Length: 85
Image 1 (cartoon, rainbow, N blue to C red):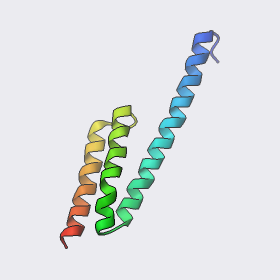
Image 2 (image 1 turned 180 degrees about the vertical axis):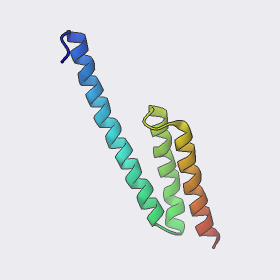
Image 3 (image 1 turned 60 degrees about the vertical axis):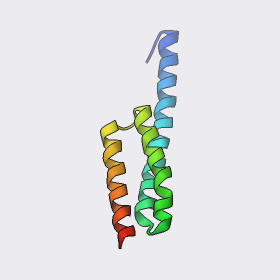
């Protein structure tokens, strides 16, 4: 356990950030799952909001920027293939 006052504060801040990052990550994963389940115009409407969530995760450092790019690319590819049918 931390003994110094500043180290205790740092531990509290890290726990708060970890909880916040877990919440944002889980929320985004759920949004991606829901987007994959939807079809048609509704899916293309949700794509921009999900891409925004993914970008925010990458900006915060929760996920790597290349992983964010790969996720966005796969989602756009899937939705474009569905709307082209």
